[in-house]
Amino acid sequence: MNFKKFLSSVGIGSVKIDTVVERPHLIEGETLNGTIYFEGGDSDQEVEFIELQVVAQIDEYREDSDFQIIEKLITKQTLEFFGTVKSKGTVMQQFDIVPDERWILDNPKAKLLLRTIVHIQNGVDAQDEDEITYTPQ
Image (cartoon, rainbow, N blue to C red; front, top):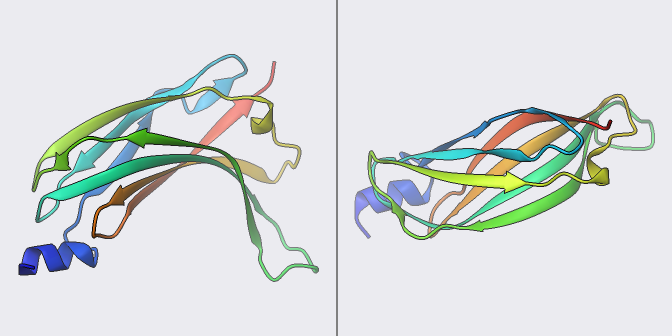
């Protein structure tokens, strides 16, 4: 294993991602769509697959819990990605997610997050997180 491959396997100089959502504030009936931008690091990176998660996150103190932030997975979508993100290169992947009634939050302190996880073969997975909103009609 050469030195650059070793560094990328521990996350140094590895691929970076940015998820851009076309409309982060959705109304019932609209589709969440956007583009994932991959920016290559110091070496080529083999992408195994992409995972998109919509998560409800509640940040509140509760006496019966050791954790202040609680997350609940609402939906998960896996995207296949064929190829490699070349060193210093840029690649784009588009996506669409259709919301459903699980996206409606009962707790006023809760927020919706779109979490993008890019699974890298023999490397550290890249991750991005964006807040979105969903309003029923």
